[in-house]
Image (cartoon, rainbow, N blue to C red; front, side, top):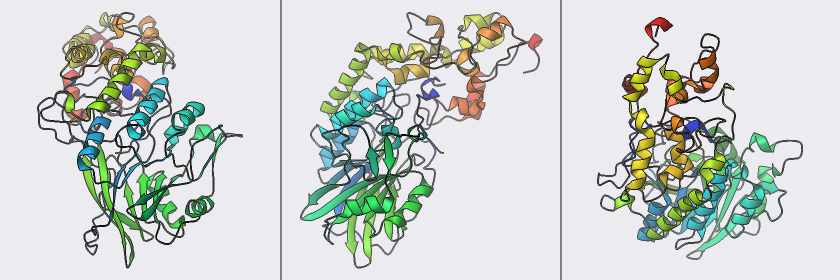
Amino acid sequence: MKLRAAHVVPLVFACASLVATLAQCGDGKAATPPAGPPPSRPAAPQDPKIEPPPKDALRLLVSGAMSGRLEPCGCASGQLGGLARRMQHIGEMRNYDLLLEGGNLVETHTELDVLKLFTAKTVLFNMEHPYDALGVGSNDLMLPAAEYAAFLGDVPLVATNLQHTVEGWPGKAFVEKDVRGTKVRIASFLLELPKELTGDKPPVSLRAVAEAWQDARAGADANTRFVVMAHGNDAQIRAFVPQLQPAPDLVVGVDQGYIEPTAAPTPVAGVPLVFAGIRGRVLLSLSLWRDATGPRAVGELVPLPGSRTVPGGGGDPNVRTEILRHRDEVKANEVLGRMARQLPTPNGAAYVGNIGCKGCHPTAYAAWEKSKHFHAWETLEKAEKDATRYGWPVTAYPDCVGCHVVGWREQTGFLSHADTPNLAGVGCERCHGPGSDHVMAPEKNKLGLHGGVAASKLCIQCHDFEQSPTFLYGERWPLIEHGREPNQGKK
């Protein structure tokens, strides 16, 4: 399964759960990993000739492509991840030498993403267990450059081959740490720029790999360990590794096609290569050392389940407080309303609400009223009132609202429950698109599916591997199945 970050807020915020429950991760059930699809590529088996790591091996905790997931959305029980759980794990283990975050802290470049960036930076670099290095991904570069530079000016931001024109660009060629007498340098390469930043006078450019790599190595002694983070797809990263001469000790690939990390390193040109997962659900713990044949690494997956006993999923209480502050700030600043209606509708028509459909489609309307789509907004309201599950303003948070209403972010779409109650819940137009032209002239303006995508792909815009881990289109379609009226042709 291939997931790619978009450069505008995707429709993943616009389709409600068929299950439409918001069972929080800490609901008392055993926290188990989602039963979604496996990583897009199977991990290579560990080389049986590699001995167990020596006692002085470097211990690294690796993650990347958090994509704005400060905590699990809560759409399904047993969800993994979240900064609060991550920092609690780090505090409990207390044996990591280096904490590395690959980059792509956000998914898009909206006002909400800027607020998420500030919150993630606060947790990762200004609290009890600060990270040692942060890479720069293509999503990060799409944020307002001045704000990005200002927020991250005091963090170990690594951008080995990036040149930026913004004043005060904080990216460094490398970060060096001393670990029990051994120096470790961390570099980070971006292998392709976003197409939006490749015009005649782009604000950012990529240096030649060989040139940037020599700058990252300048002045290092033979005993220095080198860890490289690389943003790109699988093929790009594998082609990139042999260009690093002399070779590094480890390359961490940040390819958003890998849902979970690869625990077993794959040797590429003699260099151990691993891939970080996405959304901070499963981290990668690595032991890194050298033997007579070169660099060696072994890895272990670190899922981040919720607490079985603590309401809300548990996690570091200080981090939970910081995330709650972020949620309250989003509500206080009315971000939901300001982000609404910024995009055009896919067919140019306006939203009319379900009542506009009922007159001609009574059978379909009756099927919708019996479905959980009908109660999608209601589930948000109930979740917000239940302090043991959330305790924060769910109905004002864009990531949650978008999947429980019709047309948010698009012109004439959902604004608020008070202003547009006819678009609360997941109604006809969420799947079939804005219906004003169809209402006026049904035969001339027939509706298909919103955005012209296949039905199964439309559903997984919200029912993805994390939010609906057991979702199978063939099983769920019968729950909302409907057709045309007898006088309107075949189903």
